[in-house]
Image (cartoon, helix red, strand yellow):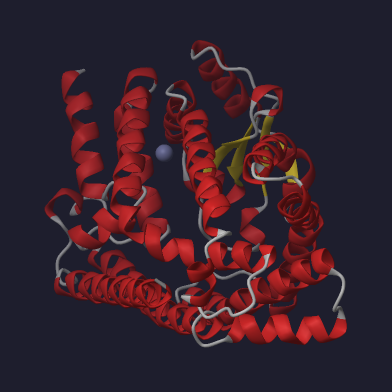
Length: 418
Ligand SMILES: [Zn+2]
């Protein structure tokens, strides 16, 4: 049974890695082969120069992702059947032979730290070589590392209690520990959704109330028209880190707030901002956030129930390179290995997300002017140097948003009706 699991895991990891590398290469080739000409729908709005910049920027980013994918696969093999986790466990056991829970937490943190560490050079390269080359990076190395340090501390402060709760429940809560853990995990996530905008996001960015009175009253009109209550309109200093623009809603219930990146406000006019906001409101009106949360909770319940069973199967450990079964080993193995098994579901999740985008566009077209949303999208594609010609298969696997040409063609049908 153990050898069967090893065989399935290694084959699946090889397949998903090869599929990822193949999709990345296809994407680059497709973009480069469409580099010489701006797609017909955009000849009036996007210059050849901007189109080529987008092609080169997207290709450069995809190359980094390809290298990162390969590095991740190698690390995963080293940690599992390469004996890495087993070795980490032995090291901590020498130090803390009798402290199961603390040792477990340290083993898990060490493995997660290794996964984070391997991403570091890629993130650094993405920021200071790729983004810098295309004029998007605003960060200094000091900011980069202090952000990383802060993220680590926040992750530790929030993650440690959950991790200890998990290990404690696994050890002493009986056969249904996974259900109690799921309940705690779900409550934790809901609390996070509520406190994130007010307590955590401000650790990384400054949020100031929207000062532009005219814009503010237009937006408030739209919010009232759509029956939406929020805790305020804020501008976030996204420009201190990057040149990319965005707008979003955070929080839920009474802590909801609308956040605009300062970069977005700089680039779009009031009509366009209103249309973008109407799109975001569409996500709320169609309950996309709630649906996503419910889906996440269901998946984690299934996952934890499965782990509740796997934890008692000796082949689960042996098949993945661990010779001393323990609660914490089951947990970390499951965290590390499950993405490989879930990768093939990715196109389904991505297509669901694209469906949500169409629904939000539909809502925007009914409550604002679709023409302005098209204008805003074109500007954002241009300013962010996003490619207009993604490889269709790559897009089907990865893209949470429909390709620009399809989305804009759909929006154009609404403007035609007016
Ligand atoms: Zn959207």
